[in-house]
Image (cartoon, rainbow, N blue to C red):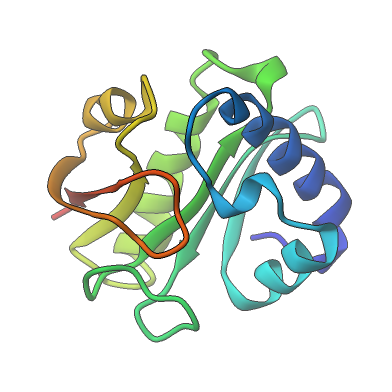
Length: 157
C-alpha cells in the first residue's frame, strides 16, 4: 500500500498513464489532478502499486463504501487504475488487480465483489475490463463529465 512518501512516483505514473486519454472526448478527474490533490487522494484512499526493479509501473486505488467518495454499490470501488505507458501490454495491471482482489478485497475486506466505472466513449477500456472478468450493470451521465460512465462489477466469491 502506498503512502504520501510515494507521491512522486505515484504522480508520475498517474500523470503519464492518463495523458493518452486526452485524445478522447472524456474527462477523467485524474487527467488534470495536481500533485497536492493526489497527495490527499493517497491519504483518503488505499492505493496499491506494482513495482519492477523498484520502479512503480502500475497502481490501483480502492474507494470504500464508507469513504469520502463511495462507488455505486456497497462494495469497494476502483477509483484510479493506471499503468505507465512504457509498461503497457506487459500484464502488470492484471497482476496488480489479482493481487489486490485476493489479498485485500477478499481476505482483508471480506467483500464478495468490486466495482469500477469507466467512460463509455473510450475505445478499449470496456473490453479490457470485461476480459478481466467485470460485467456491466449500468450507465449514467455524471454531472460535469463529458463522457457517459459505464459501471462494472466483478464477483469474487
